[in-house]
Length: 237
Image (tube, rainbow, N blue to C red; front, side):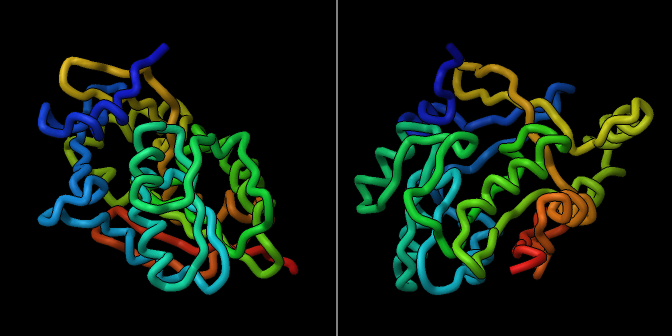
């Protein structure tokens, strides 16, 4: 069984950063400070996408320590979260939030909700581009009439010519693969997790896959050169 690298990073933040390694060796650092309620930490750029959440109820996928849930509660939105990391859910509950350890692939809310939130690159949970339409369709089935999905992702096309990514994109393209389909693993301290599939969706591809799931992109907002968020709504009532 793969160690719970994310949970270990939350429990022992002073022992080093949480690293996200791509299968070609490219590594990035994830700042968990905001999730750990560190006063000086910067919040994720896509936090502003929560402004799209309307009144009513919400389900937050990958709720981590519950910062989104608390933010929604201040606006009178009744929100529940799920996360596969038990340590994160424990922290969310200790902060007074409603959250459960669950996987979006198998979980279903007890009642339809007005907003489903999948920030932090949430559509990537699908694993591959091929699986995205079915995954979005599953999330759509959680929605009450008139409901919406709020998602964020990385527009890999915005950095495709950077030295850190050019070779990856060129190799994927030459092999007929979608460059947003990647394999990742987490590292923290001396621990290394198993490889897993992830997908980053450029905005055009998000629009295409959303359409295959019976959804349309209603609004888009960018946060820096690559990160962006979008609201998705059913194409028909």
